[in-house]
Length: 109
Length: 114
Image (cartoon, rainbow over all chains, first blue to last red; front, side, top):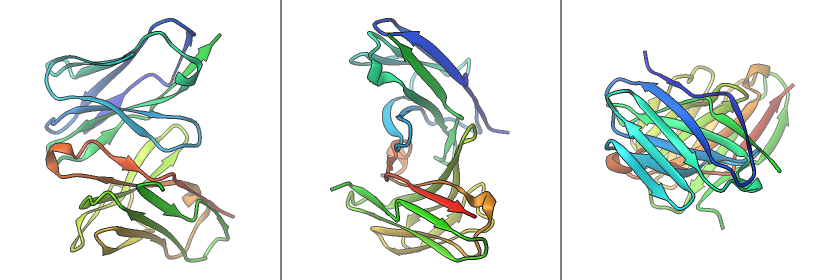
């Protein structure tokens, strides 16, 4: 079957760095996507990886290892506004997104 | 104005009532999706459409139906609502195959079935 695993909740300190891990098993693979969702709001696209390696976008970076079925989202210089859920999703062979349940990130002052 | 608009944003209804959630988009995307989100379960796909003549069931289509009235409009119906359909519903759009993973979401419709 197809499955995405990510931690349910993480806590970090303002100004610090946090890494949110995601492992996936899908029928075929066409990319790994990260979304941010603030409480009560819609998800918004953050980044995606198709090839192995690190993609950097400002304070956010995403890494992919296709051989390990593994990705992580790295958030640097954490700000209070980064408190949100982070959703990992993999695009399968039918170009359908398979979603993880999301990681709730709590930022403490 | 939002690129993907959902109406209503909030709705409380009773068991057995028919409910329609509407979605319209100005992004010009062919692909449209309906998801529901429940705490701890993440996003689950109800129906999706790749163009006006193409409608496909997602993983949880039972109890729901959809209509793609135009490229820009995709509505979701609950013919006879039941309490376990209480959830947050999202409409989303995307471009074609290469960009299929980059979804643009509406603001959501919170439905409560009593």
